[in-house]
Length: 289
Ligand code: G3H
Ligand code: ZN
Image (cartoon, rainbow, N blue to C red; front, side, top):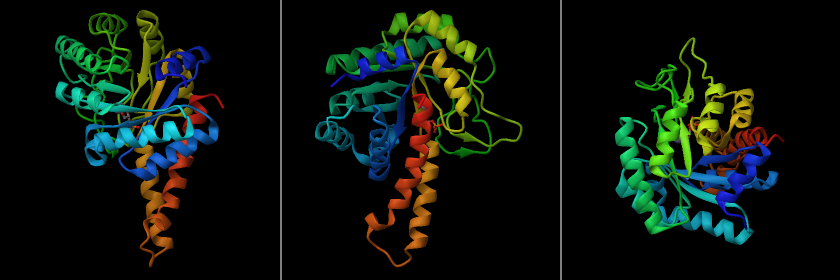
């Protein structure tokens, strides 16, 4: 089976992106795997610090690995938004395939220093682990939000510049970079605000750095922006809030339709179906299907 690194390189040639979807329990994992399999696409499962604390790090690794092995399927696990070097080590030791060290909120020099240390720690534990760094703060909550998160980078001078990206990559040795290019975590419903990506900036960052780029905060973006961003050089796209929303809608329907039912596996199917609609829709866009 191809490695995650090979899969990302291949998708870059095809001008497609690999979908990264977050989970904190089994129904989402099932929905993501079934969706990817229906379309025959590789997929990345993400767990933030909170999500993996809930599942258990080793448990998350075992779950994803068991699917990979049983189905001989390219499904990988990323330790999403890891904020300390201690947690980088923990994720690498647990067997995560990829780790995002998120120093996006730190001053640039400090972000470089800590990300470099994160790369060294993770690679010393597992040389084939892929490490992602982040420049610029894009909010931190995968929720529906009434306001743009305080401090989020949206003005051109706050977004990631190609020069910063180049310097960051040269100094840290990361495998992937998550830039701030107009993307915000969560779905923002603030009046008058529409989340739009700076496509020209993505192109320049790609041109200056040549590295694989990761787009965070995918929920709420329109398909056209995704297509353009992927053509401009995005290789991985993260979606979480939209899955959480779909899970809740489906779960409520499952409970409402079965008011007396107490067997979880008889209540969950509408939640899985709702999540699959979102995931399949997004995967089609990411893969030009
Ligand atoms: O790392 C997680 C993603 O960036 C999720 O962003 O909740 O806006 O889809 P989202
Ligand atoms: Zn993210």
